[in-house]
Figure 1: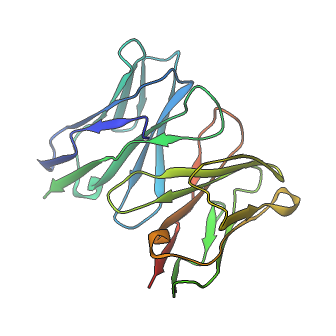
Figure 2 (figure 1 turned 90 degrees about the vertical axis):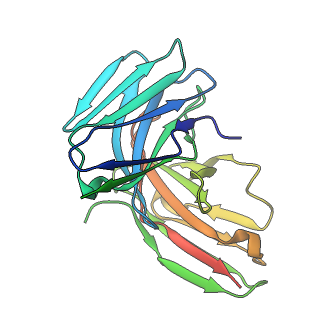
Length: 111
Length: 113
């Protein structure tokens, strides 16, 4: 079964707008990672946030983590058409051997 | 290019045939993972190596699947007697430590006809 669930399943916005995706998970974690996947391609690592961190930034990306609510959010600011992709959150299950992914959020950014 | 590489990128095979995929991790990474991804879903864990030792296998990895990582470098994933349900993207990832980022390769897309 999948640990994480992304919300919404699909998101359509205009270039320049911000995009927010949410992720919920079920068990205690050591860290949470966000990935991007363009259609039919491999996954690109975006950001890792550890369980003792609450917020992390990387360029136009901002990730928050609330371990009490078992949830995370990914904010993409000033979106571009090139941001069109599926976004996945992935967590460990408190162990250290594997990542558990949700089904992803499909983001479409229209010029 | 120093990222994770996978070969082949695409494989079409007939049901019942055996296939083998290769993954070359980032050179300094001692941890290597295999995942499988079907259309519209996130990747699902298959197996994990630390150096040459296979330390964990998912229940998804039936007896028809075998993975090796000789000498702790590249890894191979073999599927014997392929079935149509094996059609998926097979992804390899590597990392340098237990709680570090996992970096993925481009994947091998398998189609079983």
